[in-house]
Length: 136
Image (spheres, rainbow, N blue to C red):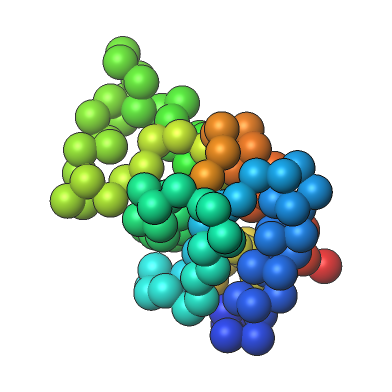
């Protein structure tokens, strides 16, 4: 099992931050461990204040449900099996893209990354840069 250490979390944040700079969108980036505890956080200059909690909650959601938040969005729509999911866990479950679980080589969720500050597509793009570093 790969632990999400501060060193690892910092590497993921650095990769995500670099991607955010490339697309010119200031972001908030959060990395949590397997218990959804915050390991590291970065708010880029100019990132939205509301994105602080959203990024952390995206990381939390991805660990708590062992799903990326885009998939959570899909299964929580009206008429879907998990409709209303976003109202659970004291409102911490985020139902739009930008959060990804971090899995070890055995597929065990050992942490999560959450990004907020742009559109859901931009958030997913930036978070994916961190996931790519984790998986390499």
